[in-house]
Image 1 (tube, rainbow, N blue to C red):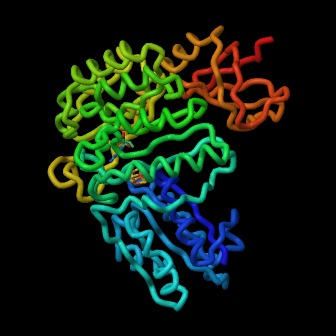
Image 2: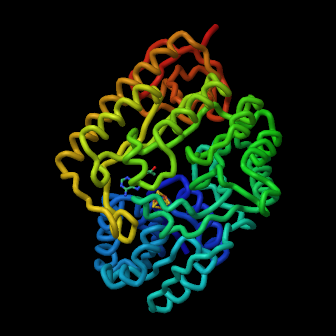
Image 3: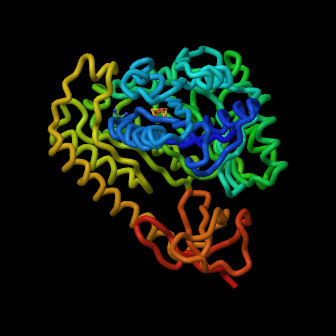
Amino acid sequence: MKLYIETYGCQMNVADSEVVVSILAKSGYEVTNTHEDANLVLINTCSIRENAEQRVRGRLQLFASLKRKGHELLIGVIGCMAERLKEKLLEEEYLVDLVVGPDAYRDLPKLVATAESGQKAINVLLSREETYSDISPVRLDKNGVSAFVSIMRGCDNICAFCVVPFTRGRERSRDPKTIAIEIQKLIDSGYKEVTLLGQNVDKYDWNNGEMKFAQLLETVAQMSDTMRVRFATSYPQHMTDDVLHTMAKYENICKYIHLPVQSGSSKMLDAMKRGYTREWYLERISAIRSIVPEVSISSDFIAGFCSETEEDHKETMSLMKEVGFDYSYMFKYSERPNTYAHRKLTDDVSEEVKGRRLSEIIDVQTQLSLKSNQRDIGKVFEVLIEGVSKKSDENLFGRNTQNKVIVFPRKNYAIGDFVNVRVTSCTSATLKGELPE
Ligand code: 5AD
Ligand code: SF4
């Protein structure tokens, strides 16, 4: 039996798909890379913005049309959209056979069997405990170099705009012993980098204080000094200095922090229920820079949240420049059903204004990224090689500790090698380098 799985959304979903493949292997399903020869197609979905859901609807139409042409195929929707829409998905997309939420994957063999017998199957129960702790994910990435390891699930932050607390349920941490077992397996099979994943890693807490995030990070860093350790995502209100000191102490913990701010206006941050102000965020940035001087910092921004004025928008751009982010992910606000913003606030910034503000912040970031990359010209970085450059197979690419992509001549190097590269030129998106003699 063949399973084709497509993954949308965050890194957490990528990690979940690997858990799903492991669970379904036990019912005799093996992964195929094309949907044409699949018996079961699963789409691991994202609900974060309307357009993420739209994309999934498009894919569902394609798979449904195959079914209409006579392919014997089961179609399943899993992940955040399954959790958000529940039974409605089965009604709206009548060729979907199964709907499974993020905490119900252990039930997949039973649900698939039900679907195989011709009935619709659904499980969207959320759990307070499930972390898939004991399940050994089947790695779907092809390079064998870098892997995601989930350390917690869910989110208790309830930001006004965000659907995640509804789709992924309550926050819970995974047993550190099983995290260590999973990472040891990765080390033993030659992986060179792990990224510890959680919606809000700073709130990792095993057994009421027995182990917090800084200790977990230290434990993982000590497992192998040649394995790089990354983590995502940090939250400004909860990120503590002891995590920063741990980063500074271990060479193999990558000097990169993704710290979403969303807006530069304290008034907007309050409306968003983020729990910190512009000044608080700037203080965290200076703590990061003084404890981990060579760090690179990226962020997320939402343009056009409820009641955002031109003044608020300008504060966002001034914060961007003040911090000098190395990279940012930027989005137009998209109202999500049932969130606080949907129930209590008005989505009153026009599509046109949202679009204009978004392109203005993108312009600011492009300039900042270019400046940040130009500062790297002439420097030598250790790069972990991840693959062959898409533009030319004469070149390889990899990342430095700051998470910047560097392209350089292939010579005799291989994927998974560490190599020192001197940066010779750049664009706002990539660094180009050469191998020093
Ligand atoms: N509209 C637009 N962007 C959103 N994000 C989360 N919810 C929304 C929404 N409703 C963005 C935030 C978050 C990132 C993962 O997605 O910037 O940090
Ligand atoms: Fe999308 Fe958020 Fe769900 Fe990740 S947790 S898949 S970003 S909605």
